[in-house]
Length: 396
Image (cartoon, rainbow, N blue to C red; front, side):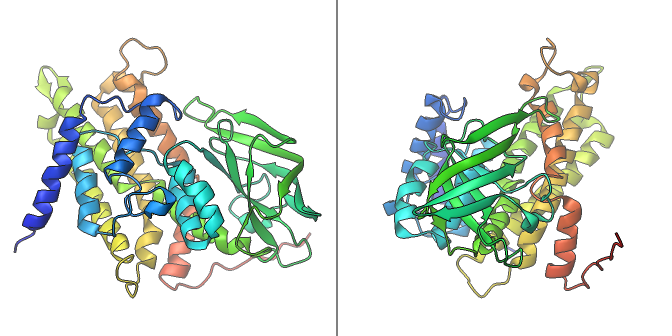
């Protein structure tokens, strides 16, 4: 059985490798708006390694979808341990939703600066009383002439403290059934009446925020989809969010970094890779990462073969991916022994503390983006057709 991609794709692989070799000393890391990050993002787009299939008229590279080329790019960037560019809520979630459901004006206004990293977004979904039951949200938007007037609160709002814009679910029809009275608005985060307060998470960083809206005025045309039909838009974005929370491409890069770590770390002068107990755990994780990659290829293929049903394949990504990524980072901490517990300014900290940070971060993501317990219900009910969980009446 020949499992090679063929000469055409090996030529493409060589092109990717040549690009990576040329740019191996290019600075690519930094803050979201740092010159290094923005320059690298532009370079990736110009060469078709980011925003590859986004049409040129919206700022992308404009290539046709190709499953094997996408896989080769991911493999080679992971092998080179080089950044495949920015993701985040704007690029990974809003852009594909606008391509499906946005107006032509919205596509031209938002997609280009978003994929270039020039426009940072945050997501206004969860509220203190509307987390897993998101459709119970209460943040209101009342039309006043040509503007929406927004009042309410959002919580667990990632990057709100640095975002330029927010895509936000608001209730515009308070008398309608809860899934039908919601609209999807876009507005600037520097609008008067917005108050952002940081929330420190398990990584000891303020990755999340709570956001308060007091009479925030938004132009009425900054709505995606129809008024009162924002739940349809929300579900589209939730699908993209769950797929982006544990990317198999990023996981492959971390797996390669873990392999390097196991080869370098020693016990009594002997590499950790020679110890069967550690090597067996690595092989189990490696096999599951491979399975996630092939599952990703199945999902990508549905963009070409529209008749292929990948609904269940998409549903398992968030559940499997976040738990697997947490296990991967946990093995790295075990490999480092007592140094795996080092944090902060500890002089013995390995890799600037990234292993410890990601261990805690992905423990949080098992909860974030819809808890994995809820995700199991979704897989069982919508993917496998199992009976819905019974609702228990509570007598007050």
